Length: 196
Ligand SMILES: Cc1cc2nc3c(=O)[nH]c(=O)nc-3n(C[C@H](O)[C@H](O)[C@H](O)COP(=O)(O)O)c2cc1C
Image 1 (cartoon, protein in one colour):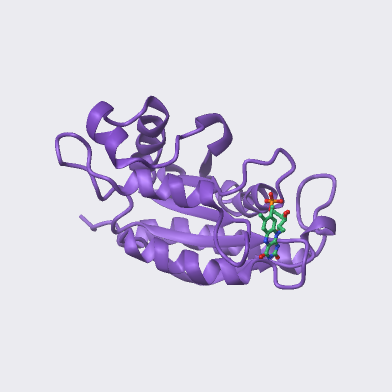
Image 2: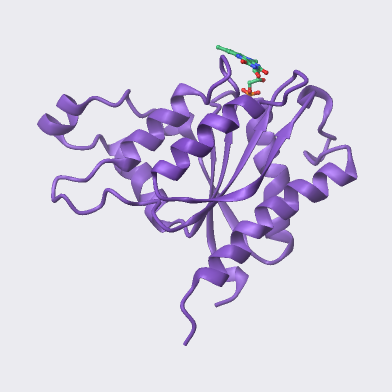
């Protein structure tokens, strides 16, 4: 298997059009694209999943938006996940998506769509902490899903002025760091594959 066959799903916990977190994921994904791979983005605004409701799931099953997100997660070999820091935690929209993805379907089969797959975490904020406090919580949430969360993470500080007109980070060192965080996920997917 080559890196070109690795399916990486990027999930931004911000639905904002000019989201700094989505921008950071786009910049980071260049590391995978540059190596010949592809990154698909899950757009949580377009998906517009309702808030998790166990009664809704019991009575009506997964809404179509949830099914679509779950299909994307199931197809992903590895993940790039970014969250805004909201009151020192991950965004509700991201947590909600993760919660829906963690539930078993009506047949009781697939409650472990993330299990055993690698993920890298990113955050971006206008302030001087870059969202690092949200990443502390997010690491626990992702571990609960059975993801192998990469030891490194990237919290981009003063992110409002961090991007150039091409969407890359102004600071070449930070751009290289973002790319290598992402690329390591794809490489981890390959190293976890059973060899013939
Ligand atoms: C409800 C709310 C809570 C926030 N709490 C924090 C916070 O705890 N720490 C922080 O650095 N920024 C905080 N911010 C500012 C966000 O970091 C900022 O809005 C950021 O641009 C959001 O990410 P996005 O650009 O990807 O949408 C908060 C913003 C909102 C709307």
